[in-house]
Image (cartoon, rainbow, N blue to C red; front, side):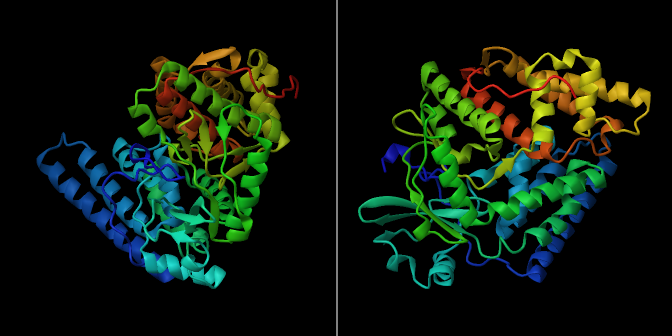
Length: 454
């Protein structure tokens, strides 16, 4: 791999200082619970320190408290890894949900979680293949090139071919449900959601994480999606090797390239930014509108830009399937003049559980007005043939709207079907990457399929 392009197939930076390796990982429910309890005690101490200082300085804001809490929670989650760290990664992508201190700290989980040491990796191979990695591959680098929330990546060679081997952390797949129960009090405090809304959120996250930790399922989906998307311009995928993969290990081709941050540091031309942006837009919208299932983990670590200026897609662990009773009302609202028809819009909102059947007329009017504004903003890229994602005003509007409704008591109760959680995450994640690229893209390449009456 070239010295100026030291990037793993999950987009991790290999050229900077290494994160210290982790020699053990709590795997039992008791061990992991104890870690959460210890973290909770630390956070309690942070609050005591904050309010003690506030006695002497009534104007003290929560910046230091947020930084201390974020650091303590991230340290704990990065040692536990798994679903709890994955939730932190997801939350870091939503600029409206968390204070900036949490966003800054949790973003590290996209690229730079502490890797597991060599002996733990060898144990995983012995468990699933009955062999050491050097008995399977001609060469295997025991030092990981990238470590994230669910697993880490190692470079290998076999028959002259450079490979990427993704290895899941021990215990991660078996501790999802118990971990999410343990993280719920932290999430409740950080997010300010109602308990019912948080239950819906956690249940949907649990379903996706159970799929994401099944690496045999990921290999099947990776092959299916890469074949389905093979004809998209400027999008490339690694080849996957089921015979060298298992429930907790995936072997695939090593893709050369740079992750987004490194790519942007090279000051690419606007033409190249637009080309990569177009590839991203087409990749996502082809899946949404032609496959009705979508790669639902759009953080920059899952993509790289190849030396030939193409978009490399390297992770299909998280897939969100969109049923018809969600797809049609949602994308019809974003892609037609249906929002101009109040009666049909309210019917669609009811189908999406954004307006409840027992809402009063005043509540119907309130939620109709707010949701119409929200979808109108979201839909702006869809209602023109091209859209310039570099414009800050569009994102300022999105963020200010999100901030405004997050403070409204009317939105403390759960609204909307569960499918919004990952579909919103997917599309706003896509918008944010396109904004970082400052790309202008043709948005009419894969149009939604729509209906105009409900």
